[in-house]
Image (cartoon, rainbow, N blue to C red; front, side, top):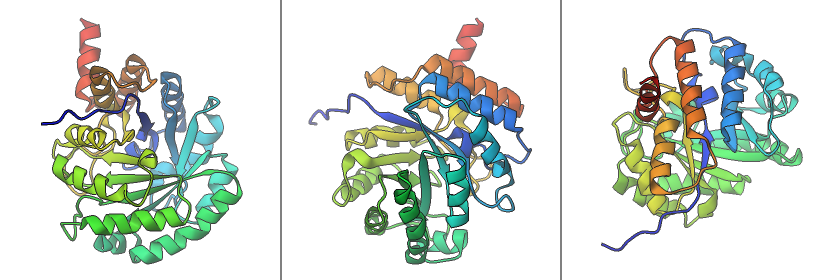
Length: 305
């Protein structure tokens, strides 16, 4: 088999403070969220998804987003992102001085209808206004495509459906597009098929992989993405974030595990793994449970002797 040359450097987008914490039932104080973001900043992440300006009625955990954005210790050059569902959310994000606006669509019509009560085409049309405003204010715009590898309602998602949404997000001006395995059903062959297809419509260097570990495939899928030349990955410190469609299952892949693998592959990230382990142990203690990250827990246990 021909040897595949892997990228020499990747960008890790830390999504724990937003995607990881948003489904937590107990209200997490703003102090804890601020401390988490600050620890992640010190660890060297180039991009941290720190907030979400959605209605607190729908996502109560994110009600403190403005306060968190106001209080974090920002580091020059670091991109602090926030999820924005509409113009009202955009105005709040703008006031909070976010560096990047994240909009979200789905590759599955069934998921789009169930999640945001409209078709994929309608959802992109709604985001077009947010996209224009984002560009007018000189901010970065990132698009996320959920259910790119499978859907809890319709099952299989055709590769062409993913490519279609990539083109739509490209056409409204997205600087980066996330290909997300929302329910964690992907395997490496499917990852190769999807990534090799979407790169025909969008620059490889601006595509990212967002993998969930529901079926234990996230690390294999990240490696498969590396083989395709993908150089941006999303992960969540301590494996924060469950999967709402699989009871008791893990959600986001743990950042510590991703960093440990990248280190072993000789791929640069610019992030201090030891500091990320500390951040993971900190937030897990604050939540009153053990971190999901295998590498994080192993390193913490080794330190404890």
